[in-house]
Length: 286
Image (spheres, rainbow, N blue to C red):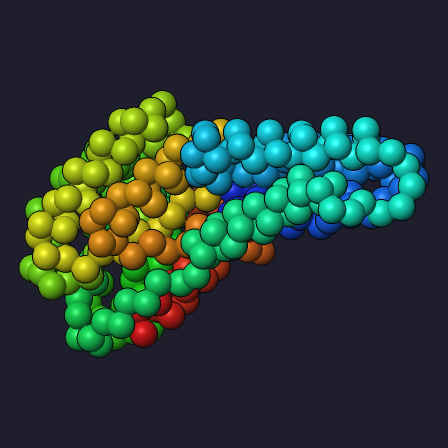
């Protein structure tokens, strides 16, 4: 998969853009020359566009307030008289922009931290998923099988190629008895298909409700997303909180998909990709 797509899909673009905006906002307090002002006037909107293309799920109100603050800072930059560095009240707009950008970056960075599962070593594992976990019949040992070898756990791979979240409910009755661990690795076919964000949220809510009521310990892979799909990861994050589901950061799947020789066709994992994903998951289970 293209490194540029993964740069946006794994959230790195948002963190980079917010860092650039925070630094540029501080710079607006001190620049004097026309060339420097022009450069910052161009840089700030470009960084804002990169942040918004990252599919980072902030509310419309938060994005709107941040954009208004950014535009106000750009206007301030171009109307402030040339001369000594800004002081006093002239620092308010760029200081607010820098602080808010840093706060948003830190908020998103918190979703890049690994969950702590702390599971007993004899707890069985089951995987609910699609072709990312089931493979496409080209002979690879899929990552759940590799995971079983590496951890010594019983791993039930219930994934079905082509499955969407709505289809995953049919996998629930096949789960081993609680308190098994359930790894939810599904949703890619919804994001890349015709499923609306509202339908995705409804179906995922039903799935996680069934797992929660069944007494399972559940972890879910956050999906790396193309631009314009922030509502999907917003649904994952909201429902993970509601149903006490550990959320595995999307940077992990993005790292696997972007690894050398990790995929067969850009999406489905090669043996190298399956091995890499098994390594990541085994680290979370130990």
